[in-house]
Length: 305
Image: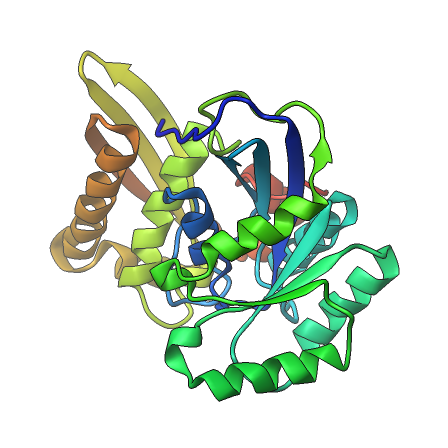
């Protein structure tokens, strides 16, 4: 697994939750903070479903980031679980990063998250992402609006896409770190099992390739993850909620599934630094997002359920 370790002499550590509504760029920020692709990124809302832990050592401090799902109004049991992941993630951290877009208004998701931050009395930093898309004056308006609703410890304009402002985040968060040894061993950049990383990479390509309601009803489970000689064999089952969705995922003469497999295999080989043989199958589990049992069976819910 790729590793980054800029200073093994760790004297401090800090755990930080990254929160916000869907599609504000939380996962892009996590990847920029770690310098590795830890979290999958797509234009689709609710891409992140589980809490993802990412680790980066800078100078004498180990920073542990919790990438959380986008906070939203849930319409399925899975959606409720995703919001519960957010709530549990902010409950025991050294500080919270609330990521927002450069819009001079406080929306409902942001208001609810601020309420949680206030109730838990946790230091919070407002991170204004996507500043590359607006004029500087707009950012000042955003800061003014959010300053009225909460006393954030810092207001940091960034562009996660271009890694602009990332160094300021590290400088700011270092003040909330505590003295102590590293929480993760040298070289470890995430707590995600390799099977989960592989499953998420495959799901990312499905989200990119598929339209409308199909992506949200998809889950990927890696059934085989085994080195055979110099080749890493990965076998994954793609679950969807309807027979009609199965046909869309496979595509005419299997074209769509082959395209997804080709893109996924390229990313898997880069991440695991190995030749990958990838096999995928598509199965139907009707309305699995509404079943707590199925949610557990497909690998969700272990964080908080």
